[in-house]
Image (tube, rainbow, N blue to C red; front, top):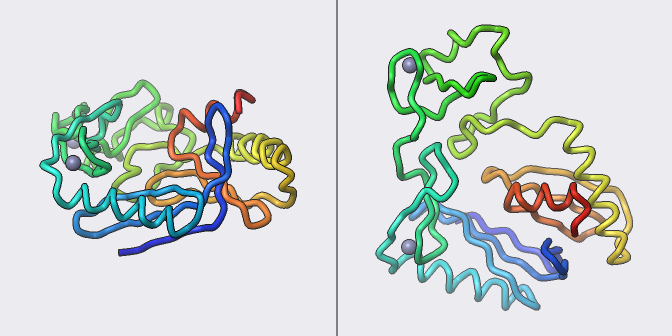
Length: 197
Ligand SMILES: [Zn+2]
Ligand SMILES: [Zn+2]
């Protein structure tokens, strides 16, 4: 199990707050868990409790807004690729979330090379399973996120260079002077860009 933790993160919401966090990426079952608390110990405990729940839960998976096969348990923090993609390859009809063209048509791995050049998206797709078919953030967006983060960090009297990274589960992490802002949802990114934080 891979774990990472930090004494200070910033949770984005209506009222941003500082928190200790503890994140775990168990292999069995393969998922991502995050606990938060006033201290790292509390955060780890919260994460541990989530993990215990995951291990004993009788999962009931739902897609929520994901079409690529990724699902979330209704009762615990478990999430993973458990469904067939809802989208089908326009060439062979196989359910796939491999690539899409500018018109939103899907192509499987085998037929992705048939996407007409003019219909190709102007950016690369990330190669990991989770991120299949998900566009990377254009450089312009990264820059705007970083600039918006400078403002939010600044409001908490945290100043410095922003280090931008994206985790394997597509969480944007921005570190500034030892503090971390973690955006687990695209919704949070949009909120940040809209200056609503
Ligand atoms: Zn569950
Ligand atoms: Zn195909």
